[in-house]
Every structure is written in structure tokens, then in C-alpha cells.
Length: 68
Image (cartoon, rainbow, N blue to C red; front, side, top):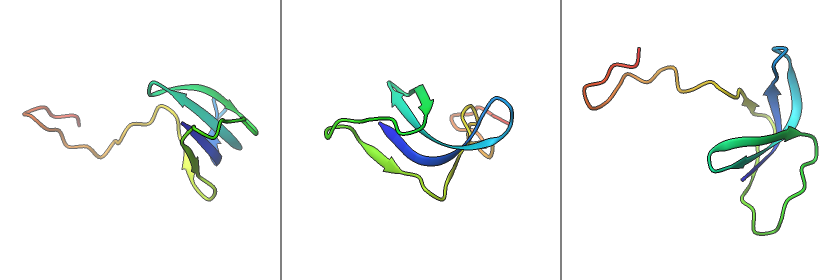
């Protein structure tokens, strides 16, 4: 999966316009203009922010587990 054109929060806590390559639910690359194959799922994330490492912090648990 390729996420194109997102504002990505980097390790310096700055937002940078970048693409992300995701493979097996793991971010493999964060850089500009990642090339992709026609068979890749590509998501246009212009006007969106991506914050790697953040998980839905508003999850209230399921299956008798409390995540807060």
C-alpha cells in the first residue's frame, strides 16, 4: 500500500509532505515521490495528516480489556 501526499509527523515533531510505503502493516519507507506499481493500492492523502505510531487513543476496550 502506498499513501501519497500526506503531512507526516517526523521524529523531530515536524510535519513534512511525504509518501509512505506500507507492507505487512509495517511502514517500510517515508519519502517523497515513492514509485509504485499499477497493482499497488494507492491512497491519496492530500489534506490529511499521518502520525506514525499513534494508535486510536480513544479506544475504550473490548472483550473485557480496558485500554485507557
